[in-house]
Length: 640
Image (cartoon, rainbow, N blue to C red):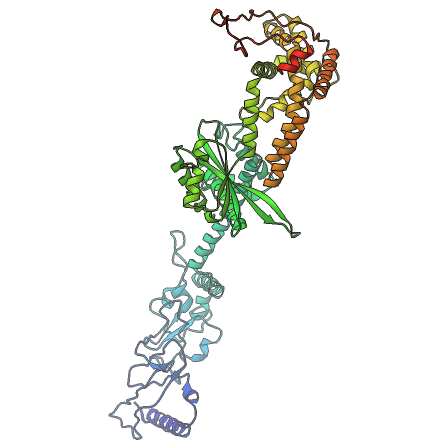
């Protein structure tokens, strides 16, 4: 090393020592200098992450001889912690470009060296102190992918070995400017810009994957909302969901699919369900449909549970058989709930159906209790149990009501359903009248005759139009377990009696195979006994029908039910007199005269009713077998 260089270094060390001593009492931030001192006789120092480095001089010599080299130690501290992990240039895109600024840079054989001002306007430029070479930060870390049609678009000098020909560094046709215009550098710079944008918006690959997944979840949820809405519509309207043929070639795939297809013409979300290219997440399979319906039903039950929580309630249960022949036990909760106007009303909530496989009292009790507990209904809040009169339900020793009261519902008193009791009364009373079964068979035959065949139904409608009657008035059937519903059938026969007779006469005149049944039905409904029975039952069942409807009302309480029942009993008792019967028989005569029926006409010939010889010397108080012949008003009064 020459004397001039030594003097320059001596001068620098002396000035640095003076500055260090003068600023010793100042803050440590004043000692931070973004420079690196290099001894030409030693290895180049390194820059750590291009961060400001706190430099303290450990050992200097005032007299530096030609034989001895400078021994300079640098204590590098980052965040007040000493580290030995140093790097020369950036190792990855996570590190910033290495741009160390030195007092002087090593010169090459042409006495040329790198200059720190070359960093200006070139953020991509890196300098390696160890190699005394420059590199391209963009091309090293953000190089564009290569292909067979695109040979290496980047310059190897700025990636592998580095550029150290300082003479050509600023040449416009070579060096920095040539590299700046190269395709590889342009693509790498574009990638770097995109990387910085993603970094600022935190849109890295993982985040982008997460965002894509979140977006897919959002789309699937929107689709499920549309699918669940269509299922809810079908369920509320009590229409079938699936079709008999749901293949792609089918013209009618059922209500559910067809509703969604109709909605897809205006709703892009529904349209995307059918246009999903994956085809494995349409959520339209029967399994998914049943699962969604079950989820919605459970949500409704949870809402009901929240409404009745903390309130006393009554439990209603009834068993019936569905169209598939399976026994189902319906569960209903009856509770008093407040309204928005601070009034209390009685509300009934249908909880669900329990499929029955065992029918003993212990099994039924366990299934009812488990079902209610499953949905969080507090059994100890039950104050009443309402079932039918079957011994397995109402038994006071081992019935369902007894087991539940002993195990779960200590306050749950048993009440025999009043609607069931009324139905049992109607059944028992009807059995007393021998003709009543024949009367119901005739009504059932009239209904089936005109409803089962489109030809006979057309004759019936033509008769209604001919008589200027309302064509909307139809013949009605009844429920086998609800005898009060038979009033609707009897009333429909009375209202449409004339059109029935006209239609039967037209069918008899037609002369085909239908005329045989038509002649028999016409003869049966024109019998005086049929007319009398029809008028009496229509009046009797009219009052009972009103009572039955009221007993099945949700808002009716126990006191009102007792009052209504007693009122109907009193009404029926008051009509059991001569005056009431004369009024009814007068209505019978008016009906018969209107439709041309002879009330004195004898019924069809029947086998004579003779007393067996073994009862010849006995007193007969009642007989079984053929019914008596009714010809006069007194006969009807005494027997009907």
